[in-house]
Image (cartoon, rainbow, N blue to C red; front, side, top):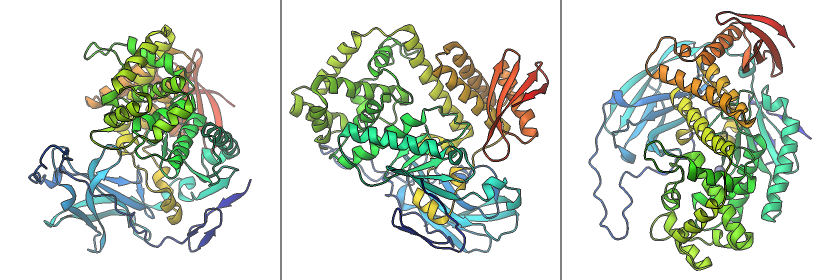
Length: 567
Ligand SMILES: [Zn+2]
């Protein structure tokens, strides 16, 4: 195992392992532009093209502005900006946004385009403002909407760099390599602490995926370990990004997520003209033996037929054609579960080779992804998508999911709906449809770690995250009623926050106890990772210096916290 650290100031490095050259970071150049967002709806071949919609320029105050990295901003930060178009407005690619500093120097410009999986309309300026050398305090930047020239200003307060936690201030990108992979991580994080085990896991998962696809893959698989939660904890493009941290509130099994993302990398390498989303994700879930954890896919999908949708009285099962046409906007856990079970059903029916040939020969054409799947099914297997669905449901109906399995499916969906509710309200950079996930190679090139490390760190955030992490542990341990109670506690607090209640954590006794413990521990400068309420008090897993965990036993009389014992 070789170890490399990147020093980023004033040095240039030749990184032999991946053939890239790394330079000192004077001013980052913006990322390559993403395709311009088209406001005209895609005309179908049988309709006349729609006219260009009338532009509705929103009031400038209606734009929302987000700064990155998350949390407080410090001198020395490379600050990024998202200028988000209000929901009701359509301005499209004809407009761009220019940013200037207080001296009038133009820092950068970006078109309004579609951003993220959800296609939110915004101007995105990556690392547009390098604050190195600036005085701490309030600074005013100006934002100009072009070509109209409407300008407004935003005040950004920079704290002195010296106030940044030492580990964050001196954080570097480092990497280690294994047989399969290059694992990039940020120094002084849980990933660095556990890197040996993570490298072993990577080799194991890569060997398994290559075996499943029956291919040798010689290129190194590049994995960036993020020390904050983004989305549900895993992404794959040309590289893999996985959340690895002690307070991982998106609760997932690292091996499974890594396996899932490695399937995406090798699957993309094997190629195909269309590869519909439902089958891309279905293949990844099926070959990983589960979505977020190992799980029996067909019996769990059968449980969906029994679960009743409160809104329409139907079942939780999502019909395949609409699911295939709008996969990522559909309920996340149900969509992935059905997709994995469907692939399992097809492989069991026709064998892997026939399924694989069908999957890679699906062609785009008239209609959406469901229509493309339908055509390919007829060509390869002589059945329509409707017939496949009838057979799939018939197979599910032969199974009898246990009440425990139904509880597990129901609570998994509740848990992740709650995770996303928390993200949308209090950790919006993490919300998967508009996740803030800058380009890994550029972050390494410029030595920027904060975007994947800093996160909202208020007592409210930490308390809700520790609650979610415990809820996940309870569900993984099949402690459904305890897990459900904690999910309920999180939702009670989020509802109280939405209503503007002054003491939102009083909305649920479990939340109140967590809040008291987190408050007490944070005051004495521990990083709180986990909290457990036990018969005789509260057990807390915390870290202080570095990332070494320690356990504290706390007393709790319903009002006051006190230390009983530390280990
Ligand atoms: Zn996936």
